[in-house]
Length: 66
Image 1 (tube, rainbow, N blue to C red):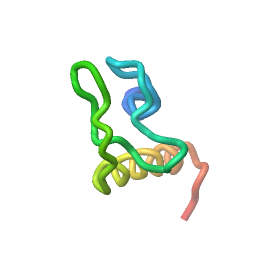
Image 2: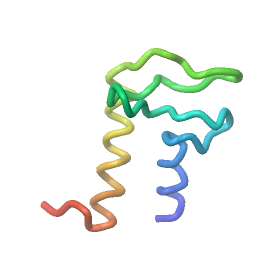
Image 3: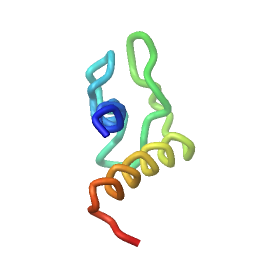
Image 4: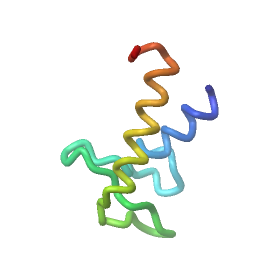
């Protein structure tokens, strides 16, 4: 679980650029990070990856039950 949280935090700015990849204003997720900057594209695949990671954490913490 610790590793899952650490990996999820990458979306929230715990990455080599210290920048949030998840965009709270748009609900989207940037397509990735380069050596010096974020990739400003926000494709469906990136957003789905973020949402699946978030959902997985919420389920494992018991925040969401089916």
